[in-house]
Image 1 (spheres, one colour):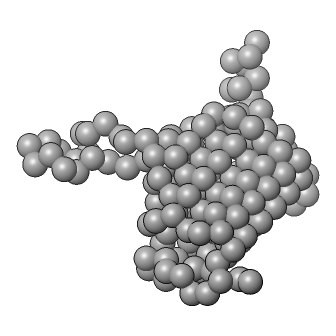
Image 2 (spheres, one colour):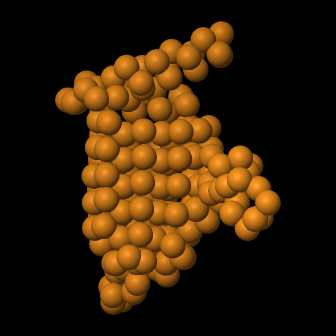
Length: 169
């Protein structure tokens, strides 16, 4: 019976991925709540959001994930409480090995690297978060940034790669 529920939840997420409106937001949230490792209260998942390996993803309370986002959970993703993720953000938690000249990159086994996002974080539109990154609490990441390294608490970052712009307080 558990496998049937999982298949139904996967079907629901896939079938109604592009539908807008309150009903479909609730439907996506409910189905994802069944698939994810953990999902808090008051989570909004916008249309056209893709989630892979949902069993490795944890989402806290009061989280907003807007449309056209991608969360790749292969290596594990943990999103804290009160997080806003803007349109088009991509979070990757795995990478390819590329340090062996005798092996083809695409044939190497994926390397898992967990991503952790703290509490009270605002991630701007079209941000890319690379594997193994830890984003501290109270962080703002400017639109279009590429996060390649850990980000300290209560700071504003922007750019490619994301660099410290200023401290919030």
